[in-house]
View (cartoon, rainbow, N blue to C red):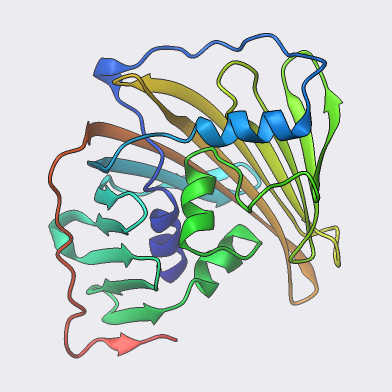
Length: 258
């Protein structure tokens, strides 16, 4: 349950809205595109909103054997807070730039600490900002022309590669027209078998472009064996820029699992 709750925290920042969505079509690539110009276009494409609330469904598993969780409520204030609540409040997640916390009344446990659990699940290190970028379809780590280069331009993507970021090699596929990430792959340069792959589809919600689906495949070495995890996220009933609050208090008597 501990891992499942933290998986929920990863889903907050991607959205779907059945009543107000439209297909986002790809544009044509510019084969003369410079890396600095592409990075600037990509940065300018970051979604502009303040708050979001709605619900999320999440599937997880391995080797194609997926299971789903009941729908969860969530609220988010951009750059400040992520909040999830299971039905009847039996479990909640609260993530801020300073720390990640949750409690689970069914197991009588809680966690109140850093981002190490989320990083372990993803297979690479993240903080709040990295996580937000990942889940919004944006570059994860800061990019500039000194550590990033365009290695390929195909008919559908600009392929960028960033080297030597916390011993990671990151490859991004950025789509033309929207300048959002279609896919990314992060590899541990010290152990190339350990890698994470993320793929996105997008939609427009009130003229704001958000991910529609996010699929995450993680390969990690655990006790000498290669462990594979699959995560799929989808979001519903989204409302933007409404007033939100984040009720969260760790129940007394629950056991800390640091």
